[in-house]
Image (cartoon, rainbow, N blue to C red; front, side, top):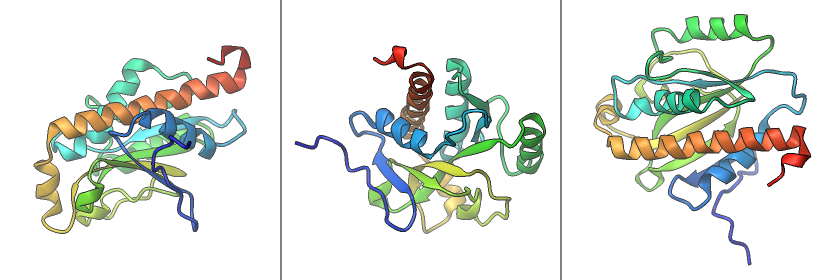
Length: 199
């Protein structure tokens, strides 16, 4: 009997989706993220959490960054927290800092997004660069080799206002699930390096 959640893959490109409420969601997020990471461990992996604490919905990225900063993952370099967010104004500057600090970084971009009503609460993991600000018509540089997004509210009308009026409770719970997924990936990478750590 298959007890795995409905964490599906599109045929044309690697694209995964799961509800943050799904049992074991962090484990599945971690497993899929590890599958997409480069196999040569020497390439530094950067988690770039994009967003601002001035908008409830858009605070998802900085919240995840803050949780990860406190948990101190071994295999990931974390940028973008509530204290030092990566947002529209400083995005290019922060990308330059990341590329100057790390040689050939593999960037996992994280951001909040809007979607259909039935998709609110879903976490998506996609191959390819994130296009931050697209939902609110901002022209910003693409970020990352893969991106992890959380659908925090409904798109289609006054997106900026919708993001500002998103429930903090939902954003917090999604941030905790997504950060736990990244920590699961960190643990899986530890086991890959040292099979004796297998649980």
